[in-house]
Length: 168
Image 1 (cartoon, rainbow, N blue to C red):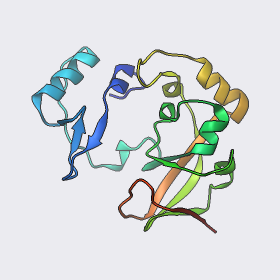
Image 2: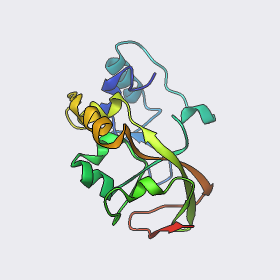
Image 3: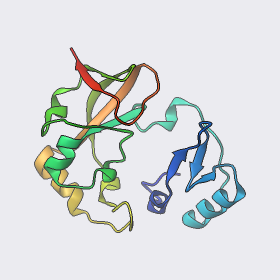
């Protein structure tokens, strides 16, 4: 089940604990409270389990956005659900990044293509109220693509403030 068909899932916030375990709204994902709350949001009983297969990704492991494109569109960047936001990028420069590499700290990633946006962008992150005009704006101004489907070339730790360098 995904938030595409069950948008109430967008109301949960996932983070990592100090030991790298997934927390859902601050509670370890295996806690019965989490599965109960997810079941309530979905309207049916569910069992949560860890899945490590590649099909857990929409397209590629990372979705990268830039502050320049987000500012250009004058939108809340959380609507894009990026894994990584690169700062100090001018305007729509990200649109020239596919097929290049990006070094962030010691990690190297490869933006492969611009991401086609879907209905998920229409949900306001805090209230979950839907505004279809957000997607219309992305379609009308950016041909429906914003952000970058990105592969990991050289894995490594990332932290806020790491220097990001566009490689050739």
